[in-house]
Structure formats: C-alpha cells, structure tokens
Image (cartoon, rainbow, N blue to C red):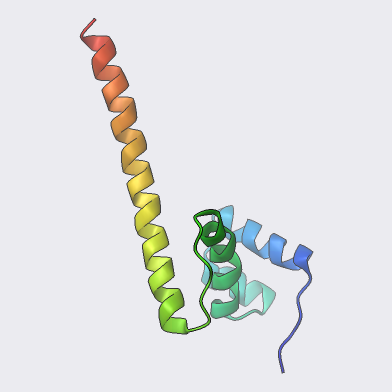
Length: 92
C-alpha cells in the first residue's frame, strides 16, 4: 500500500535536504523511504533541465548521475567566467 503525502509535506522534506540535512537523516526523521525522498528532491531539478523522471530505478540512478555532472559543470563554468573577468580586468 502506498502512502499519499501532501505537497506541503514533500516541500518541507525537500527544504530540509536543501538546508543541509542528509537525505538519510530526513528519511529517518519523517519516516519516508530513501527512494521516495530522492525522487522528491531530484524531480524539480530534472524537470528544469528538460529531463523527465523515469520509472525504472536504474534509469533514475543514471538521471541522478547526469544531474550531478551537469551541476558540477555549471559550477566549473561559473568559476571560469569569474576568472576570465578577473584576468581581463587585471590586464587593463
């Protein structure tokens, strides 16, 4: 039997993870499974990037890996952008 959680409950759980709590801790505190919480956390981040969340656990794991890689690349791009701006100012 699956449990239906309210949107507010889901938002609160995601907010706890985003505020620095580990997913494992939030799962224990709220009594939800790691798979469900992971889906709540990753779903909006995937959708923003045009990725639809798959039903297959292996596919979801691949999507999560890809999402992490995208986030790392975005951080690297931001660092390079700032370094480029700094260096162009230093040369003036």
